[in-house]
Amino acid sequence: MKPIWIVDDDQSIRFVLEKALLREDLPTRSFTSPREVLQALDAANDEDGPQILVSDIRMPGGSGLDLLAKVKERHPGLPVIIMTAFSDLDSAVSAFQGGAFEYLPKPFDLPKAVELIRRAVEESQREEVGEERMVAAPEMLGQAPAMQDVFRAIGRLSQSNVTVMITGESGTGKELVARALHKHSPRTNGPFVAINTAAIPKDLLESELFGHERGAFTGAQTMRRGRFEQADGGTLFLDEIGDMPFDLQTRLLRVLSDGHFYRVGGHSAVKANVRVIAATHQDLEQRVKAGAFREDLFHRLNVIRLRLPALRERREDVAMLVRHFLQQSARQLGVEPKRISDAALARLSLFDFPGNVRQLENICHWVTVMAPSQLIEPKDLPPEVGETLLSAGAPLAAQADAVSPAAIADAGPVGAASAQFADGTSASPLMSQAYGPVDEAGTWEQDLEREAQALLAAGRTDVWDVLTRRFESRLIVTALTNTRGRRIEAAQKLGIGRNTITRKIQDLKLD
Image 1 (cartoon, one colour):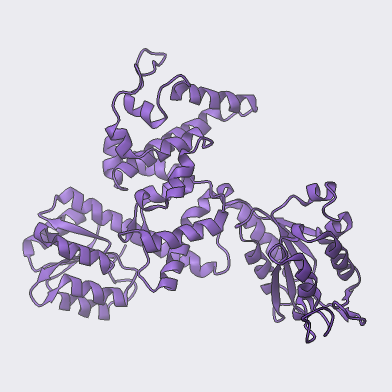
Image 2 (image 1 turned 90 degrees about the horizontal axis):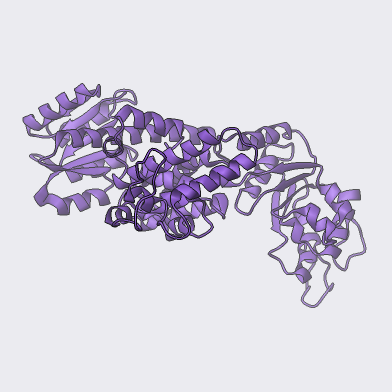
């Protein structure tokens, strides 16, 4: 690991931090002034540069805030911790605005300082891995098995001109897949033309697709080429094909069958050298049964079908996507990229994302604008995340996670008494509050029993593992939310060891 750079004119501060960090096997390098740091940065390469920078705010010969600004110009992704006296809290605000990771008030508690530095190191290492992954996957991101299947299918279809049908819920990235299929096909040098058939009025859609001749209808003062002609030699992406009017389906079938079409008001056939990729969020088989979609067109389009998973089916990709979209939003807005805490990331990973990847992208854009500090905490997430988790239809586990630590801490005894376990011990008020109030509807244990009964009735043989993992996940997420992502403190509150919580976070895929 690269060293932690410490800059402070006070020799005692440098000494204390060096010794404490070395006990944690964290290498250090110390400086007495901002000028020395900037000279060392100029001379450093990627291997011997800093992992993070810890700087005092007031030093002879330079300010820590000035140093922060210059460091961020050269290394925008480097976490910087600013040390400041309690009387310098106004400067701490300036530090956050300048892109500091966190500030460390003096005099500081040494274990807390070490924990903060370790958290910054972990964040720095995560960002390095995330940047490598982004370079390797510029078009689409996903490590979940379902997404890997999609990537493999795109690879197999790379040298084919076959018609493809892409299915999946709205916001799953169907157009991205269509663009990838085009880019990796023999038609990559031709145009990629997309049209959303549900977004264009029925009266205009025929002209949009096939073009029209001059005088074909009122307002048609010139000949106009349609999307099929515009896509000649390339790919035409027909999004939301399930909403195409029935009479136009007949015309589309004719084009797919013999490769010719007529412009509106035209009498000469036009040849279409186009690969068609269609997409829909609807169940086309049901549309066929209902008589709203032509069965012969369905079979013509459904040569190869790619199903895109919903984001809730690939939760392991949420962390990667969040960091990608935060970087993307920061570039679009011209601001410093924000970071996300483990607790906020865990909260997002539990959200069902009815709008899928598009909704996650919008959330990342929202917090880039609205989150007050550089580190995004659960409280900074948009209201719909918590509201959905607390809705009546949300599963028990999600409701447990959505209860804020403040609400738990402020809650008094719940109901007349806590529920009794088989061994005679009782559930604490805190636990009862976390899983819902005790009332006529029953205790949280009864909710747990109902979930267990449902899993058993479904023939599952992994009920213990499923419910235990969910229970442990909620406990850890709630503790991390309560401690603002500080793992050591969360472990202490839960009564488990630091290594145990680290291992559980990895095993439960909460990191």
